[in-house]
Image 1: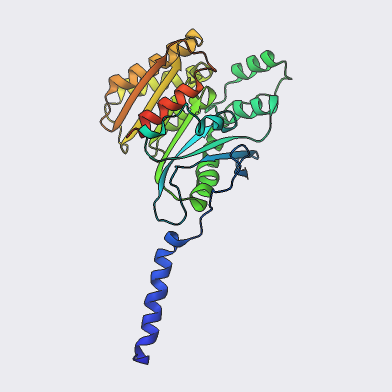
Image 2: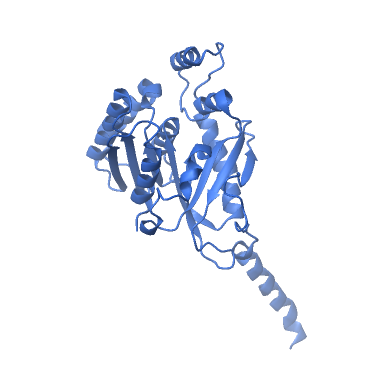
Length: 294
């Protein structure tokens, strides 16, 4: 070999390694994990809360190949991860997708306090007082309107952690039930294409009706175009949920459907004979079938 060419060859080799590094960077192997325990606990500097991360992987997921996967981030993961790998989900009819359940580390009333804070997009003092009275809590315990900070936590802490350690691509979705459905709809309305698949299930629009639902309907009515990347949306509720929850979900869905936005593929469903809690596995399956159906 010509020794004069050696430095140039080394430079080219080093440059290629830098460019290809993400492809060969060490990823975590999910084999041997305990699916009933959280895979990770993440401390957020934005919300000052600890989050449990429960994960589910496609059957053929392996760190030995270069295949990457879309990710669906599911709120209230502590109560839903049991369905991730159960017979409720027909995985033969959906694309391979990594499921990431996100929930608060605390339990009981503390978990409820955190949910009302993280999953509500706007501060609603009337709701704060009503929830405190319902749970017998001291005034000032419930503070809604932390959704902005929680979204920052997702974008800058939780999602980057998952993407660094697992074989993901930039195809991201988010799904939530009840308060989580309200937060997911907020992510959809504020879409900057960070998430492009949304599962809005049993959304608690009644909490931020004046601040969120009505402005959303005005947007759907008056905005003829929505310059966004191709986006999929699934909205659902149970037939036996509160009349207000069902009617608000129908309102949101019908106005969005009527807007006929070019880049938004939207479907909605009311599950017969299902209540606010029994509908959860059905709506999760519906979310996966509608957002990731083969």
